[in-house]
Image 1 (tube, rainbow, N blue to C red):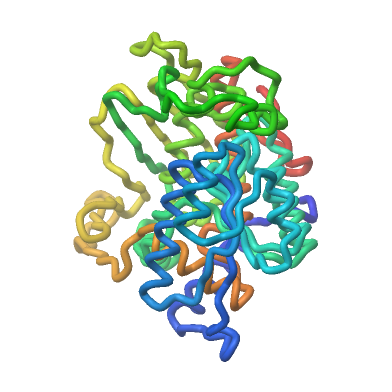
Image 2 (cartoon, rainbow, N blue to C red):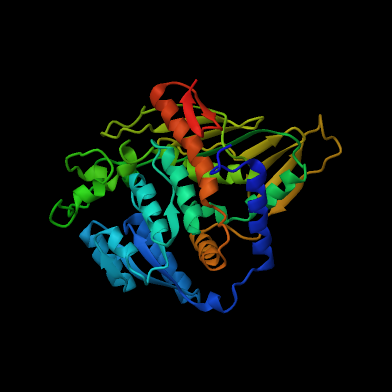
Length: 412
């Protein structure tokens, strides 16, 4: 195993430590009262949501201040600066050079995540990076983030807000206690339908003008040079140059908790299918996408995502002794009569719901205590490995296999 990798036992140890710290209410003493000074990089839809969340947390007494904002689109930058009072920057490196910034959030298109995150970590900033942690095409980006966190001793949280739900911690404890027996299979879906503007290449605000109020070249950054097209800017998730579509937009929210709950790490094999069957508006990514992930020694995981049908499949984990359904106030454990006839139905009730506010509280707590957040960079690396393999499988039509020694994915 490479020095920058982490096996299942290491992951469970770190996760358990995080749960213990949360339960005991770890405090950093007087330092806890000092505001964490945040800079926002990317002030579009998700970035604006983060700014609103931070404003709400501050109003509720959380020690946090937004001291800087950055965007390549002038109207967004001006709105963010006005609403927060933060210093405006058109270039993220200017924000990173500000000694008053302790931490940043990254809410840019996917293709910028890794570069900005590594630059921020090297600049001594803690990082809240929106999902997906990295761009789908290059798995090396995820490994570089893990290295950057380690060499700089920083904190990184991935923006999978549902990870703030403590049902994952409670379910993981029951799995570790053997309640399910050997793990066999898990499944989840994120199904949507209708006119989703962030997926429509026809999206435009009618105001964006490259080289007037938008730095298009800076926005493209490490992506291929393309002529200006409003849909690429406002619906970047529909283009392979910047996103993996539903696979990297939806699946981090459902795969991350499954990986964490079952204590998984790198996958063994991954294969994907789907297609662009319903939409004919210039988008490139499929409107339905299915992913099959096989982990070493089990379990297998099935994920389905769609922007053309909103009927879901139940989120659940199957074991030899019982099945665990995530529903209602938490989860329900149903015993298997053939192998666990004396088992009883069990309800596991959450005590903390997942939300953007709770996810930010976890990040801010870890900035002060220097612990690993619930959705940390190692978990992000494991998730991005499966997603990289899945989107690559879709493009090549081949099953992908992971080499744990080299930490590389290859077609079978």
